[in-house]
Amino acid sequence: MLYRYSAAGNIIGIAASTENRPSPPHCPQAVDQWVIYHPETLNLHIYNQDGTMAQQCGNGLRTLGLHLGLPKLTVIIGHKQFLIVKKHGRHWVNLGQASKLPETPIPVPHHAVNLGNQHIITFVSDNLISDFQTAFNHFNISFISQHRNQIAIRTHERGVGWTLSCGSAAAAAAFVCSRPGYRSWEVSSSGGILNVEQHQGNLWLSGPVKQL
Image (cartoon, rainbow, N blue to C red; front, side, top):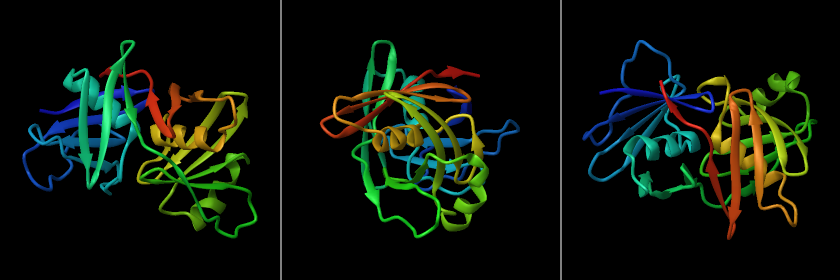
């Protein structure tokens, strides 16, 4: 059975499969990412809209927590584990620790971030998207502005295109904007507000989810 959710505008499809390497389902209604989980092992396979595999999906992981209705669970993507917990009525996912990647020598200021998947975070106008796509065709590319712990973001997601929300991009943006004294952020996208918190170096993500 197939289920669709909106995670702050990010359309997530959920399906169960016992296959070792399941294929993305055929669905007449569009999704941004498919999260396919093994009901016993909770091994996950995540597919982008264009059929490519994603290394992770922050919005998809917290959506899976809501879908399964569990207060706490650990899921596996490849060789990495992700903890999902329910707190104050919402599911939070621990995306782990982010790290900076070497910058590519292009004339536009940017930050390259690894969070299990790769992100470019920049404070320049999104009119420059073509400059970044040429150099970073395997990255999620986010254009942000910041005021204290509030971040506005627009993301061009690998395998999807412009998206209303990208959870891991929100966390990567919070990592770039991290300053002493700031441990929580509100990240506003076209689809809604995501919340990011940092605990012991780990980035936790939460936000609204509703079934469609």
